[in-house]
Each structure stands twice: as structure tokens, then as C-alpha cells.
Amino acid sequence: MVPVDDARAALARAVEYLRSLQHPDGWWKGELETNVTMDAEDLLLREFLGIREPAATERAAKWIRSHQRADGSWSLFYGGPADLSTTIEGYVALRLAGDSPEAEHMRTAATLIREMGGLESSRVFTRVWLALFGAWPWDELPALAPEMMFLPKWAPLNIYNFACWARQTIVPLTIVFAQRPQRPLPFSLDEIHGNATSRPGRPSLRARALTLLDQGLHVYHRFAPQWVRELAMARAERWIIRRQEADGSWGGIQPPWVYSLIALHLRGYPLDHPLMQAGFAGLDAFTVDDGQRRIEACQSPVWDTALATVALADAGLAPDDPTLVTAAEWLLNEEVRVPGDWAVRRPELEPGGWAFEFANDNYPDVDDTAEVVLALLRVAHPDRERVGRAIARGVKWVEGMQDSSGGWAAFDAQNKSALVRELPFCDFGEVIDPPSADVSAHAIEMLGAVDRAGTPGARRGLDWLAAEQEPGGSWFGRWGVNHVYGTGAAVPALIEAGVPPADARIRRAVRWLEEHQNDDGGWGEDVRSYRDPAWVGRGESTASQTAWALLALHAAGERSPAVARGVEWLIGTQRSDGGWDEPQYTGTGFPSDFSINYHLYRIVFPIMALGRLTR
View 1 (cartoon, rainbow, N blue to C red):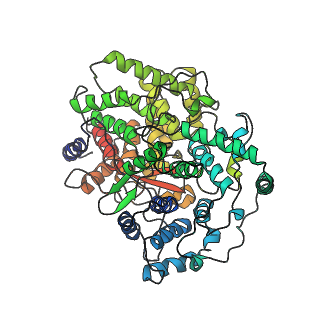
View 2 (cartoon, rainbow, N blue to C red; view 1 turned 180 degrees about the vertical axis):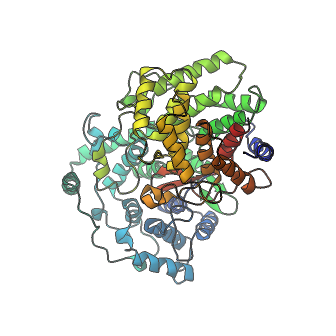
View 3 (cartoon, rainbow, N blue to C red; view 1 turned 45 degrees about the vertical axis):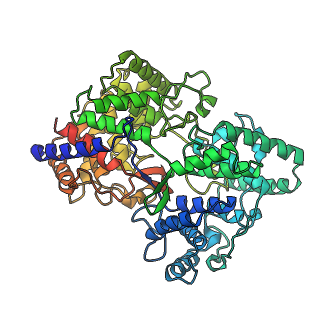
């Protein structure tokens, strides 16, 4: 039996805590924690532009040092293995901060870097930063030519074949690669060179062809007609400028932001130009500085606010509670009513959706839109007609973004060209945006909630999602770690769409969750599950992942001992202030390569689970 009284007491504490975190304007935003490459690259950006300040550098260095492990390394996520490129960037940032290479923590890091292959074995993006400072030859990097801006939208390798986050990064880098600047560091990095000469593995025929293309582009770089190159860079420059957001960012994420600032600077924009100033001001707004300075790779207020609204409604707040109404009002004002890059593939589709960030009109996404619709449905906003119109536009936009396969991707439709994955440049993170089970599940859940589960599109989506179920009964989680997240999204969606709890697909999912419950009663899954099947469904119990499992089991109608043990784990690990500790990274940017600790996940999802289970 679920310990209902204790669960309700825990729920009340959590609700009070979550309500205390709401901004007066109605939104919530938890810190979005990643790894120290964000902070290292911020220092490198400022060094390159000549604006690095000693005091801010030291506060950033303090944060970077605090995340170094005993073996000298830095990892991509809490508890993860040493990551070579992250360790190199952390090391170089500390050299910028004045840490002596003879200091114990630096010698330990340098030794590990050499043992792991040195600079020669680092990822391309790390070597791009080194090339900017003359510490790596530009000729030994994959080629990127601004002339790719001339490729029509139907051509292979055109910029719209890349996912939105990748194209926003690649376009400014074409300018950087064309100009190949070098602004030497005040020190050498000889101590972290290795002996690696090649990377293992036999490339595919297509990859070998792309390598030949890369070699041809290197030759072209030496002989490119200046007028053609200038025309290409001017087109890339205009593309970048048109996509700067109202908050000064590009895409609301760090990589295209820093490269766009560098590209515009190389194109002659002075540091006091309004575009540059807006970019710097936006970076400041993405900076957390509490004595240790760190940069958020992104911010998630729309996502956090939608989740918090659903959670508080699940907890029993009245639909007209001012907390919910204020949140709904803020969400309504965040609706995106202008076309963005998604319109390249869906030119006839009317705008209507929500983005992840405060200001990202160019890139609304299906996941946020579905969750916002689910949130608005739970609130009794005084202007019901306005809410109804916004919901209708959001639903129509999500339906229009459905992939031909039946599933939904996050930001684009029909963005699944595997060719771009094999480019020599693309050795870190996902560069396309194909449909995923978790995003599709949220879209299907939304369609069920607005009584559109019976439409042909919803039925195709349901068939696609069912076909994505893993043999063991789980679903892969693209945007959260991992099978626990995917299953926690898929089961409630299937039930909302009308699949009965007794359906074989639901029963397989329930068995998988019960088989992967930890001995302590919680659920957890390590980021390494993306590459190593031995980690699938395995990891230290976390509040967010335990809640995801409980949400799936509740949707399936389970009242089993597994549910009671999961609830007991949440009750037993709750802090006195109503929250939970969760240093583990349960969010995903790029599977395996970029993980996220959403600081609000540890509160909103347990509230959802406890709220639904104690109704």
C-alpha cells in the first residue's frame, strides 16, 4: 500500500517549496548545469576578443577547479568517466587564470591528458579553440567553407540538413574557418601534446568520400576566388544577424552564441557595436555568479514553467489559483507567432508554438509546445477565448510538424539526413533532429488531451511510438536519461491516446520498470547507458527518474509494491525544505556527449508523481 498520509505531507512540503521559487511575473527557471567547457570557452572567447577581466576570470577558475577530480580530470557529467576534451579545455582555462603548470592539480591533469592521447586525440571543437590561439594548425582541422551558404535547400549538405543547433554553429564557423585568425596565448601548451597519429575504426565508403571532399575543400581554400569568398561570407553574416534573438543570443544556446560573436568581430564589427553589445549583455544574463562564476549553456523558463504548472495542478491546486493563472498568463505571452527555420520544411504551416527559452522566436519546438498546451488545459484563465485560440494554434502547429514516418522531432520536420553525421567535422554530439520517442509521446499525450487521439495523424504517431518500443519493454529517451525517461513519457501518452492498461505493450513496459527498480526503492539510470547497454536502466536512484517511473506505473494503473517502495524512497530522501538533492545529470543535450542537470527536475516531477498517486 502507498503510504498516503506520509506522501501527502511530503507533497505539501514540495508544493510550498516550488511555489516559493516562482518569479513574480509567473515563470519558473531552475539552473541548467552542464560541464566546465562552457566556462572554459567563455574565458577563451573573452581572451580572443581582448575583454577578459582578472576578477571574473578568478571566480570562473574557482568553479572550474571545484569540479576537477582526484585523477586530474573533468567529466561530462556527475560521476562520469574522465573526458579528454573537457579536461583539456579546463586545463587551458586554468592556465589563462594563472595556474602554474607546475602546480600539483595542473601536473596531474597534464599527465592524464598525455596518457589519453593529448591534444591530438581531442575532439574537433576543442582543436578549433586551440587553432584560434595558434596552438593547433588550421590545416589539420576539417574544412568548412562559407560557400556552402550557396547550396539550395534541396541539395545534400545544405545548412538546413543540419539540426537547428548544428546549423547555427556551423554558419558562423564558416566565416572563422575562412579567415583562420590566430591570437597567440601568452604561454605554450607543449606539456599536453600526445603521440596520437590516427583514430581507430574503418570508415564507411560514404565517410571516405566525405574525407575526399574535405581534402578538396582544403585545396579550394588556398585558391578560392576572393570575390566569391567575400560574397559567401557576406551571406553568412546576414544569416547570422537575422537570427540574433531579442535577448542577444543565437538560439538561446552557448555554442552558436560565442562563434557568432567571433564571426561578426572578424567581419569588422567593433566590440561596442549594438549587435556585439547585445550579445555580451545576453551572456551576462546567462551567468550565475555566487562567488564561483559559471555559464549556463541554455535556460529553460518555458519548459520549467509548463512542468511546474502541470505539477501544481497534479498536486491539487485549484485551476483558478493565482499561482497557476499568473503562470498561464506568462506562457500565453511567450507564444511564438512568427515563422522560423522550421518553415523551410513546412512553408505553408501557420506559426503557433512555444520555445524553450525566454527569447527564441526562431526555434520553437514540439516538446515545449505540447507541454505548454497540457499546462494551459489545467488552468482556469479568465480569458478562456484567448487560451483556446493559443491552444488551437499550438495543436495545429504540432500536427503540422509531424514527420512522414509518423513521429515527431524537437525543432524541425524531415531533418534526418544521415549523410551529415559522417562529415569529418561532426565528431561531437548529434547534428540532425530525427523523430524521438519522448517528443512523439508528449505530442501524442497532448493530442489525446484535446480529444484528437482519433485523427489520422495521431493514429500514425501512435503506431510509430509503439514500433519504437525496445524488445525489453522500454523506450529510448532522446532528451532525458534514458530508458527510464523514454518509458516515463511513452506509457502516459499511450494511455491518454486510449491504449488500455492491459495492452501487451503497457504490460511489457511495467515489467521493465519493475525489473529495473533499485534495491532502495528508487529508480536511476546513468548517462553511460547511451553507449553501454550494461547501464540501461541502471544507476543511483534519483528523484526525477524515480518520479518518471512512478508516473508510468500510475498511468498503467499499477498499485503494486514497486509503486509503494518508490513513493517511500521519495518520502525518505526529501529534504526538510521540501526539495530533493540530485547531483546526477538526468537531462540530455546530445546522447553521451552533452548531459544536463536541470535543477528543477528534482522538484517538479516528484510533485507530479506524488500528486497523481495521492489523489
